[in-house]
Image: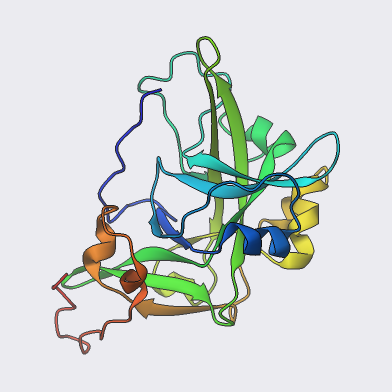
Length: 244
């Protein structure tokens, strides 16, 4: 299987980086998953093409499972994977009708555990990366879709994408879109119900906190807790931060 190199950012698309540091056992307890646990390493800079944990529901038993899937959805109908488009995000407004996502939306929804995500805010001195996380300090779950693609022989590639929606009021100061963040009470409905469209909405305005971080997050080669360290923002009119 050919592994595509992770891209250097800042990305122009929404939700192009996030943080997932919860140990596998903690994810199991929080999401009440069964089965074997994957070997799950923490990542402070999950990037497209990398593998990350997702929670899926078994269609026969109804049991939730925690598995590692590659970020960037490859539809099962793709015949030639070379050069195929593999989007990392799916727009909530069109996810039910888009040929790229509608089958996965109807039958293969998942939860994507995360501690935080990054977005790049346009400032006079360039794009400033911002970390965004629940103000409570708890983890969260993005609404996701997953697919499995079969290649030649026994090759099977499982991939996922994160669903995005319009930004809530605080998020609009950074970017016009945000990932769909599901409340814990909605996790079962997202995985199980026939039409979860009502869940595709912006997060409550008081859910998240925002802080500026180092531009070291721009490169997926950088991966450590220091990426979440807050850095001072330049005063208004000061041109914005420029150092990495």
